[in-house]
Amino acid sequence: MILGKVVGTVVATISHRDFKNRRLLVVQPLGLEGDAPDDDFIALDNTQAGIGDTVLVNREGGGARQALSNPDACVISVIVGIVDSVFIE
Image (cartoon, rainbow, N blue to C red; front, side, top):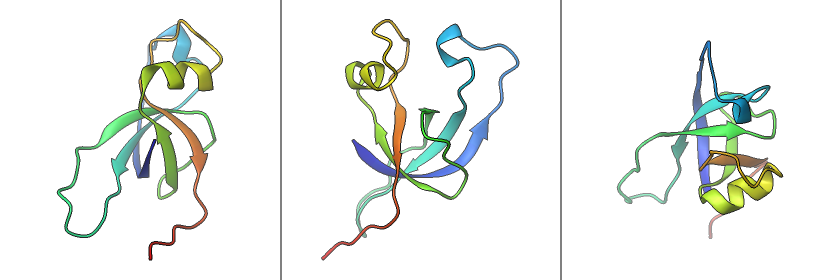
């Protein structure tokens, strides 16, 4: 699981059957100050997140398929929660 910020959407005229009725969002991973930033990635939205939202993303295939309740889905990253606030001490 990682924290990220939704920075864009992906539009596809044709998509895999496992992606039907779900949006693909571009997520920028969040890290601590001074950490090297990771590259953006695409995640399947399971929460109705939008651009600018801080989200919790499951980036492991098995867990992502469990979140979708589809053991045969071809997915690696799924947004599983929208984060209200983060406090780092």
